[in-house]
Length: 464
Ligand SMILES: [Zn+2]
Image 1 (cartoon, rainbow, N blue to C red):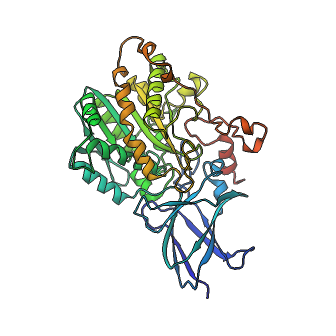
Image 2: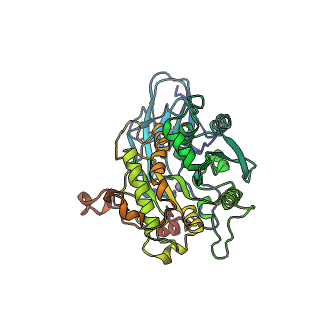
């Protein structure tokens, strides 16, 4: 008798649609399980229903012996960034809530428009697969409760579905540093990162005892930290949007006829920006994950109307100091900066651009990989929740380093070492060795992780 196989996404952050199960054509002993990723609610501004994040549970019963299952994500070519699948390895775990239990299936392939991997099940019970280990709402609430023991926790407002937008504030320094996470809910590594920042800053694992660097920083800065900007999308298993389909990282300013942020569509951003206007901002970090590039990198507010040598030097010094503090950060690979101020004026609705422009301050988007991190490869775990936390904890070093310069008068950059100079990033990470092989070369130019126009048109007209 064949085993029973049941697929479910009815848990926090779950996303999958079961399509069918059938015998594998090549291997009579194997079973194919066909699934589809579910789209987010349609995004009016970008005219696309985003999708790419998935997480699901399989429950197996009546096993006679080991059973090979070939999992096939059949609509993988219709996602927001299909070109990002190459090099992706899916995570699996038998304990969804243990964020450090996940390992990667290294035989994950993207071929003929499907993402697929084989798993041999040798025991009955539940098993989980994900694009990146989920960060559940229960874990979020636990984190908030722990933070409340050692710092001021306030809610800045509520999401569309009524979840609180919590902000943890601490420190008594004259400079104001805002760190926000997970505007894009499927980028779960961003909240794992938040946990790392908060654990170190508040001494969450040491009964409130903090290291000497933290004590110093709390006299330099007053921190405002939002661990999850999009709790609704997080629970719903969305890739990029809140409950009504708003991509929060395009809601920071009105664009043409499209008014933003608004309480009706993007209260999450509305509430945070309102508080920022009260506190002012001297340094801003917006934490994300990138589907495609297998590196950690920063991206600045290049060419916003007030962009100058000062802001460029701050970005260079921050990224350089971060790379020295944690070898998982680097300066060469990242989004290529936009060509001109004309391009950027269209993107003042992106948080980093809006905050840099509004407060004339250092503003940084930080991206972590979904894939393995090629700076320090580890095929078995790849980029992971643990390394995301570690990267979060080590952000305090670059914050200490740039502190004297954030509001410095004069040409402070002339006194900085050469290694702190801003490096223009490239997304051509496969470099020269593949220069002649067109299929390996990522020939594209995109800003702020926008979906390629060509792909969008094709998917809208149902051609892919
Ligand atoms: Zn993002």
